[in-house]
Length: 165
Image (cartoon, rainbow, N blue to C red; front, side, top):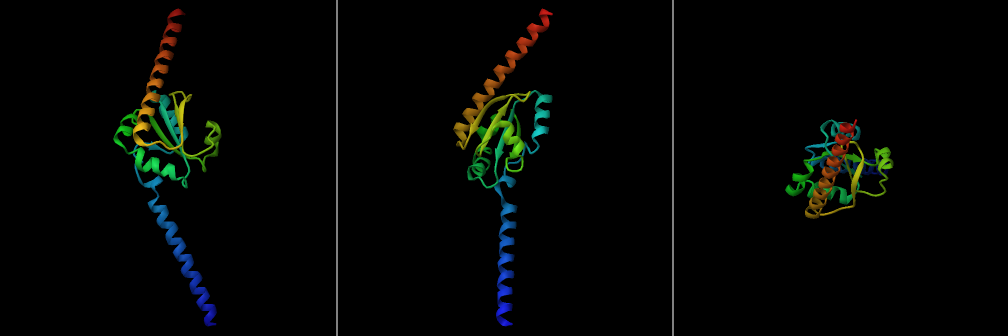
């Protein structure tokens, strides 16, 4: 009986310890805890907001287990030079494992993948993988300029078309 009680006690302790560790990880997960301000979680809502505001979109497609995804969120997104340029976008973070439809829609094959869309949902560019803050900010700045140029060309074409009618 004593050996059986000892086995049950050890099993109870192991289960309690595992549950505590998992709960602690969930509460301190960097994907949930840091720099969530301004990032949406709903892909569809982000696209609607972008269209209404005529702003480009950043979709950060990540996996909770992905080390580089956590590093992007912990070190890159909070950097002042990155915030300065990403604030010009509607930003949405999508867990690719929970939203396989989004992964299929954008052809995502690895994490992290950051997809940039125009206000109408057309893909402008993407970043596959991790990039440190300074080069990331430069790349996003270039993508934003590209988005602005494309928007201006579309506005001019629409204006020329309307005046020709």
